Amino acid sequence: KKTRKLDRALSLTSAGQREKKKKRIAMGCGASKKQNTLTPQPKDTNSTNTSQLKQDEDSRIHEKTAAPLTDRSTTAVKNSNTGKPLRVLVLHVSPLGENSNTNKIINKFLEAYRQSHPSDTLVERDISSGQSVKPYTQHRVRAKFATWAGDEDAVAEDDKEEWEYTKNLAKEFASFDRVVIGNPVWNFSISNQLKKYFDHVIQPLISFDPQTYSGKLGHMSVLLVCSAGMENFFGGEKDYNLPLIKTMLSMMGIGDIKTIEFTGAANFKEVPAKLEGTYKEAQEI
Image (cartoon, rainbow, N blue to C red; front, side):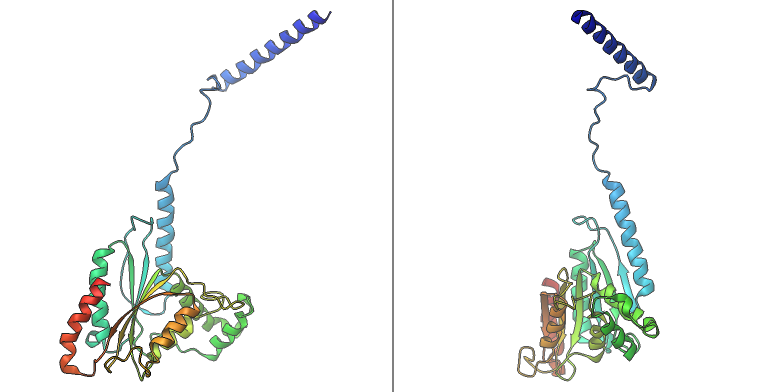
């Protein structure tokens, strides 16, 4: 009796297996289990890179439309090491234009930088004119303190329009990997235009944590191209320029700061010869 039950069970099992096999053949799955095992496919890097480049392009488009400052030039090529271009902001601060010592030094630096980093994105901005950076008004002050508690939506309705400009400028600054800043000394400190620019970009939730006062831009490195009329000005007792700007950068978490320091600009006869030495430093930094 047990033998008959076993034979009947085996018969049913075989019939079930035959039925399953017929279904697999009908569905085009007649290959063996080994053959049907999927081989892991390599990741579609072209698709990933295409998506990333599209995001970068969207960012650059937003940059041109949202940024209130003057673009002097932009270049963008894919960085072979990171898969996307490093973003470099260059701030021209002196109102002297081509006659500015800091601008001359920056231009020499950029000549060498473009050759050694051909795939980086360079964005040059001239913030020297009175209208290039908007005033830091009461609406912007109120909006800043409204967000201090950690709520961007706390900004009052009549402050939102002016706050939008400041918020976009701060977020744009935070999006760069490297920043080159022309930093001429004005009355022992930084220029009013550069100070006004920093008033906009140093913002809670964007460049620093308002609860811990820790900076959020630790990914960024900065090169300060400095110029002063006095000999050996930087680091001296009258230097309120570098201590101030380094403190502001530190507030945003930026610790990687390099300087090119040109002094004695008031001695006009010696300036051309001294600039040649500074040009070499700028091209080698």
